Length: 250
Ligand code: PGA
Image 1 (spheres, helix red, strand yellow):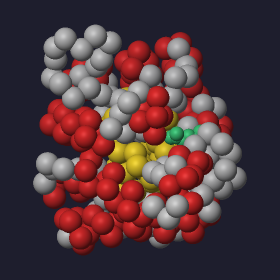
Image 2 (image 1 turned 45 degrees about the vertical axis):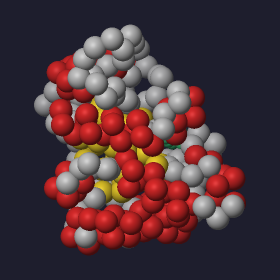
Image 3 (image 1 turned 135 degrees about the vertical axis):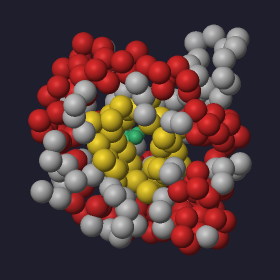
Image 4 (image 1 turned 180 degrees about the vertical axis):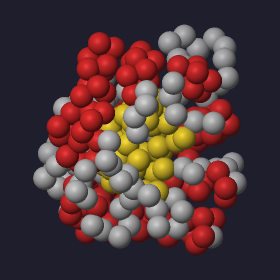
């Protein structure tokens, strides 16, 4: 049995003071959660969120990481920096990074390797655009994105990766993939992992769904056998909404 993992992706929202208030509001609301609970916050909020989460079941994550250990990369943050600031997780390859910041499958792979080597837990995002789904490329594309991103990791390292399947057309649009669509594509990702790394490894990898997941649809999605959690954008910005997602089984 895989333990579910629900992660908030705050994106570019919340100042440090707002982050502290949100984490403090969340603490009592999610303390009975049966899943892992993570908030992926802007880098400047990591230390504050970590301090606010102390003594609770809330883990803190970052939203991106550079692949170099250090050096002349103005504006970037290394895995060691994020870790020391208090991040335990890091989102890599989010579609907004691919779309607006020139992220490629090759750089996603470099970032994954850097994060794993530094001991950060990776939430790797993959997913198709609407035109790719309509053209029938979804399965090939998510397989390709997933396997390239994991190149260079051994089976033991792959087991610990969390994958977030996020169809781009469902992110921030209010349109959710149907329970069956999400389950089916996550099954495709798991089958690709099984072919490459063996069934034992594939069955250990936790694969989330992301894209307009919210209190009203979380139950149906989480009832699907392949779906092991969620990456939550909009609905993670209010304590009550995020808690309702986290407590989907209550
Ligand atoms: P959303 O974002 O829940 O607002 O659709 C999800 C994500 O981008 O991770």
